[in-house]
Image 1 (cartoon, rainbow, N blue to C red):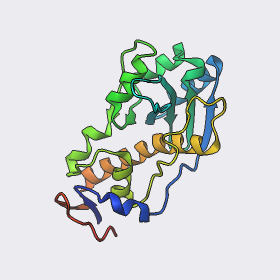
Image 2 (cartoon, one colour):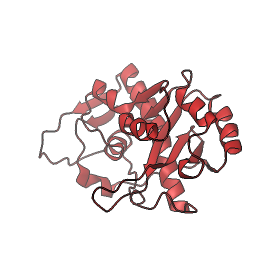
Image 3 (cartoon, helix red, strand yellow):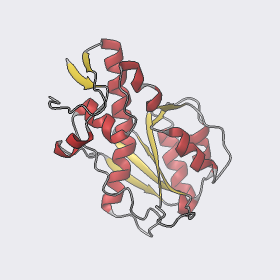
Image 4 (tube, rainbow, N blue to C red):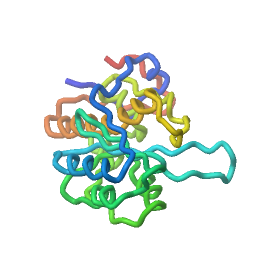
Length: 213
């Protein structure tokens, strides 16, 4: 039986083993590559999605979303939107109603994508709308993954330049891990809901969580 917590102690995350996407990462840099990627992605049963935006360190200065990452369980495509924009095929992916696309805080991602193109979102599933069904109150990907799997998703690359001419290996791995992790969480949450094979420990605000085993 799995032990999960209504709230996960952030101080414990640093003590956990790090999890990284182990599959293949494909950077998409042209409309032709985007078409091939989308054709493949729409044959899948479920996708994980996320976006990255170049951080702004000046008040009032904002950037458009630079990267759309879409992952299967073993391959992740990184669409460099700052280079190719939202092509007709990427639009086809975003509007698709057949393949579930799982993410976290999707309202914000879709809002940012809408600044690049007008589209009707199709079959997106926000994990934040589902974790409460088994009593989890946390909303961040890092806390959710630590709670459900006892592993740490590093956020060390989050504030790097996502509009760089070439993404470095650390950025690519970070982006792919975030999208892939959404599938892993969705699968496990669905399993726990169906099986009931978990014990929920209620954590009050300020309570120290001592054991995550």
